[in-house]
Length: 616
Ligand code: F6R
View 1: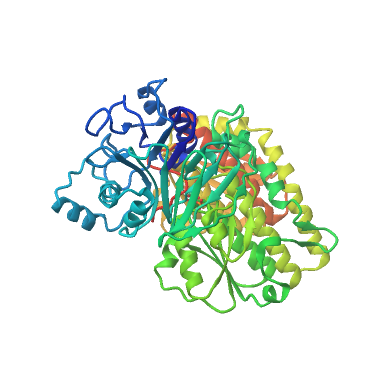
View 2: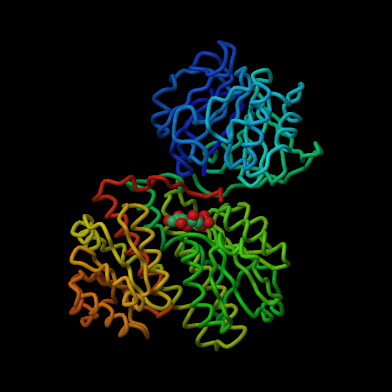
């Protein structure tokens, strides 16, 4: 949510900043801007010696059109905005300058005490040019500067309440950038005679693989050849250099029209990666290296709580069904945003998971910290290596999906399921599951990628269905048991990418109210695999049919009975009953994707949304 990048080195900064911003665009696309340590472009400051700022509402391509191709300047900062405080206007776009135009900052996060700070600055005669909370930072920085930019930034951030990833520059120290973080990610990239600072590694992957993840309360200073990290007491901190293993092509579309489509198609491989090395046929169990819990501690777990938001929450909900069935301990998924403010009871024998693709979601991170503060143990289920949740959790599992760029999460959902299932297998085998049952589960899990490949090989019926129904304005998605959360997820996918209003419900619940909304124009998509609840779902289908609602079914190949009741059927392969959430999610994702295409929506960048929601 908001992407920031900084560059200092021997090359022209503008193309590097624009390319980095393009890769960060999924974090926000309301407006964008750059500041360069060079005169010669539109400047909000006071003359030709000021920092040059070019910024505008709209996407990176709009910004690019404004930037002269040969613009000079080898140090610069850039920002792509997801609006929090202040509307989407040119003035509210970052970077922001102080009154002299000598200092510039970009900021990701929310400054909670900005009203007080702004009032204080206004009383001192400072003029504001935007409605953002971020602008106070640059005025404070300019006032704190006494010859040392790091000291000025350190003094500035000590006045801030809230979250921030900040990169700042000063015309009087060209060739230097400083950054600070609290709650919003910031990563330093170490190149050959050049340095980068960005809100995530995708922005700099084309230039370097050597990175340092900043922690909350840390400040960094960089020039082309050197960097130094310190804490808020100006004490030097020595940081480890990490190596990014992602390939550049993993953040490019590689022939697909959209990242969402690419990521849907990547699911078989992503699930294989999530399972690799984690299934042990000899002992018919799972292996998860990073849990930091020994067998005895795992045996003592009496309750499992999964904390997450959005799609990750739906994955967590699915996992609770699998955990209760396989491990026979109570398992519950909680909306992280709600748990945090509920003064949660943290029981001694409870094990918590924070599931997050990005590992940066503020709601999930803060809920995790709340549980940890109360003495609870929280394991992370994350995709982004080195992300805040991954680092702050007490152990955990990487899902290894590779970068997920599309705002709509797809492959992270199925890979999180895979990771949770391995955990359920491991815990189940320590308790009630026999060797045979464990083996059957391993076989079922290993079959999933191939089954998804079979679905992906025949997408024309899904596309045709989308063509027929994309003009509908309301949809229901209905499932039971372990597939109820899949119905929630299917509805979320459809609404976020195609802007069609969709409700996910337990198929049992529609008779308790929602049935009133069924009309000939309101299709219901039923998830009706061959499991213990199939008959019940068919009954609900008939109830909708009787009220003339169009019925679309996602059923198992060869299910004639479902075909007789439904108006339309899409088929998935026969599988172990716990594996249907994987198989039903994929056609639902594709259906949402194709509906969005039919309606001409911007699939990868849905309106009002952004990936990696680092604000509450
Ligand atoms: C939906 C979607 C969001 C995220 C949610 C949590 O497609 O992408 O609902 O799932 O913001 O994000 P993570 O998993 O990064 O914590």
